Amino acid sequence: MSRAAHMTIAIVLVLATATLGAKQGKSRKPQNKQNGATSQPADADQNGSSTRASTGQISLPEHHALVPSYDGKSMILLTGKTIKILDPHTLAVSKTTDLSRKYQAIAERDAYYVALSAATLDLLDKQTLAVTRSIPLRTSETYGLAIHPTQRVAFVTLFDDSGGTLKKGNAQRIAIVNETTGEVQKPANCPGHWIVIAPDGKRLFSSTKEIYEDGVQLAPGGDLMPKYGDIDRLYSYEISGTSLRSDKVNKQPGANGGPLRIAPDSASVSYISAAGVPTYAYNIPAFDPADVTQVLVSYSFKGHGFPGDIAYHPVLPLVAACSDQVVRLFDRATGDVVTDKVQIGKMKDPHHVHFSPDGRCLLIESGSDEHRVLRSYDLNLNDTEKKQIDAAEQTRKPSPSVPAVDINGRGARQST
Image 1 (cartoon, rainbow, N blue to C red):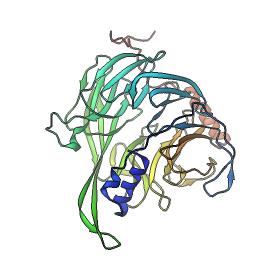
Image 2: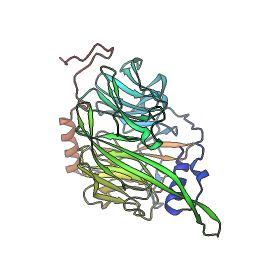
Image 3: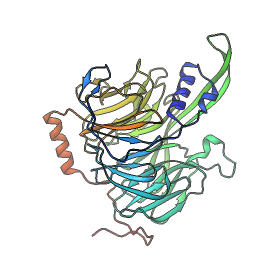
Image 4: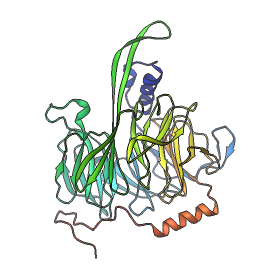
């Protein structure tokens, strides 16, 4: 679904001023003609004054995935049937490789890539990106991918109505895939559309959203218009080996939400919704992973549009977040706005935010469906913060740190 259609739904649910037809708006064909990164002239900041330019930018198609590399030195940009390896500071492309099929999600392990297509989970050779194993998921549609940090196990969200016996909401469910044996489990009563795993490997989180027509109401002009409702859920599961145990369910995590984000220390998980928690707060909450019904702190955008995304800094107590109007940094613990860490040029329609794996840059996706751009901005770090990041780099271990495996399917072997 296009960004424009998504925001129309948000307005429908929160302000009740649109129609169901707007929810079904068509995505426009993306354009991606730029392969490399370019330096940029000075921008105007979000108040219109001049600021320092971004350190690099690259064009994006509407549908893509951007994730850190296994060694934490690069960003992996997946655009359908192509992978690009980016420098997280300049966004220069160091390598471009075509893939044998279209993928919607990817993650890198020590020995191979894990890639999710519409119907399979594939293991790709690190050098050639050829498919070394393709695991059928027995589904017509997949949604999300999360790989376990210490086991050769992947969690996939997909559509499976068990031959028509499950309703649509319950048919969006979690599958557990053993990357070594190819076994696929679909445990009962484990719904999910969006999915993240705690970096410590102890918990898995999923979310679902359903929008439905709920009668009619009187529009401001006196006409009748459809009335809508939504059902949002945030689920928490404890992981034990290759099994999941349902833990907590938050039945009011937000309104018209979806994506999940997890903090690198596994101590906060966020569900991003258009209306926030409570409804009309227009914030992004950080929930307690041990009890996802409890809000630890919230990051507010009230008066500044609909919340859109959040990223937790890999080292420092900072979060970056965006609405459809602005990008902000917050103190992670207090929720206070932080204004001295980055100078962001004025941009149209921010979509997503990321920190570079080393924590020195903020990456921002913005623009229309036809012309999306990823820009990189250096963070203004003081000496203490630089030392913290340097120390984290020296002690950082690649993740997932699991034993090497024979990706041709002959079983696991211990690294030497």
